[in-house]
Image 1 (cartoon, rainbow, N blue to C red):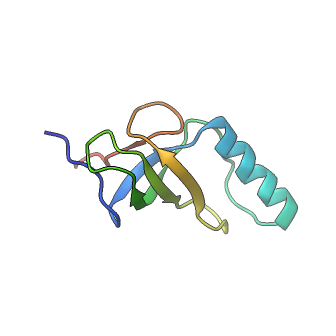
Image 2 (cartoon, rainbow, N blue to C red; image 1 turned 60 degrees about the vertical axis):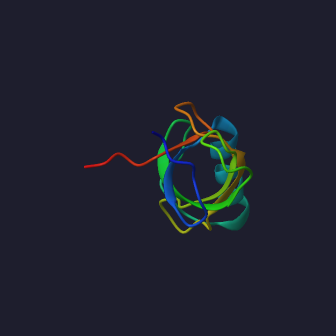
Image 3 (tube, helix red, strand yellow; image 1 turned 30 degrees about the vertical axis):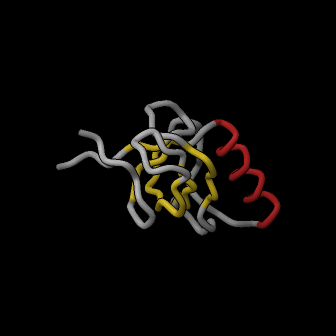
Length: 92
């Protein structure tokens, strides 16, 4: 049975087109460097807040990018497999 998220857990976040655009814009404005970002790329994220206690809960996330960027603030994101959603890390 799927587990609900809880603060402090690490999940995988799939960037949306808006996320990638925001990251690129911030890099241009600040001179920060990092690897190219685009919608669909997956990055680790830390759950900061959960808006309800069930499996379909929306979460606020701090997404860890590959570069000098500060963590991306992704708010009210739900679990899924589309850009702009989070998923549990694959067990290996």
